[in-house]
Length: 446
View 1 (cartoon, rainbow, N blue to C red):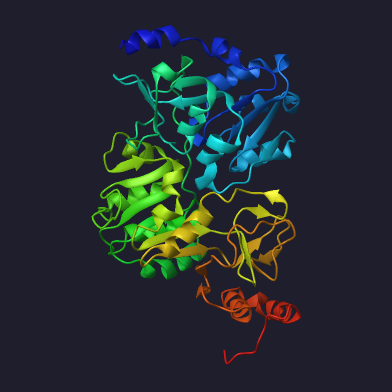
View 2: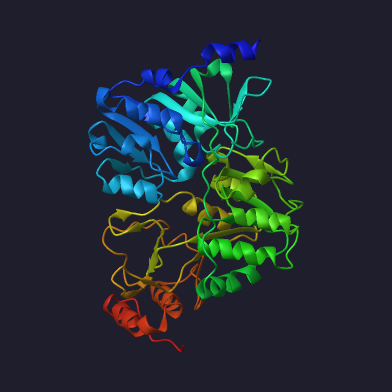
């Protein structure tokens, strides 16, 4: 088969390619770093010709061109699988909505529950000698999107890293509708954040001693998980493994420190496995054609049954707040969507099922509001409208700078006592009074 000839036959301009989009269509923008750039711009230029075009994306790293016009919402509606700051702006603008999900189920949504995708457009690597375009940083659910798509538009970016992986990480030219060659802009980067705070370090100091040699790591996004990663890199730990939803810069640092070998990993021995990656250029250079890493569909990486097979699985994630019943909200502020369930619940459950596994949900004890008011992240009950990302029955360890508590096996009064013990001291007496009113407080010898 002459793949180059087929490539030339399907090569076109962005303007010509996006003519396949019709009013009323469902269009998929893939995921995170793989959102299209020149195709998005060309589609935006057709705004006045189109109405009711419904677009799906997630973890959006830059404002789509289709959303920039003042009347954009009259032509396009954005649907986010997981909110970033950009997705939140699209929702605030009145042209966007959030799609709740457990991330591990997303490929199945496309296979079984969603209407066929009219058009999918995504950034990929250049084509290889076998006619394949690699998804690069986001295997995620893209194979299942493409399998249900009527039209597949590939936007080639020479800067996209080629990441080795399982089935579900490439698309062949024979299945592509059109190819466009992008502007080879640098892949969007996600900074690791500022210097760790004293609170970040205090939390990390409580978690790192709980990690055994040979552990398999999953880190969420955010300052605290990154700080834990930095401390792991500086620790005496050895023979660690990685099996995670999102691959972040901290893993590169741990690997560079010689801590990751994967020797004791029950599955995919020696390979660092992830569903998608976003970080700095350091990360992109590291994963490019690196046999030590492996991209995989998210219904593999986040499957509780897979996670449970990995001994000493250590899951570390963030939270917005927790109530005295032990319910964790990691995604909203009241009715305002901040992020999403993502894979947190998958990893909280999977880590506990792992032989020797532990999940840690960490947060600062307080947060300062826009008005300067300091509020406790340990609250009597979740704010009305807030989402219980992790039901109380699933929560294992919770950590603030004031301590670490294990919620497994505790009664309601014990849960309240444990939660209050890691709250900021300024709020403990009020929390005790609240717990008494709710009938979940018992004066103990503590």
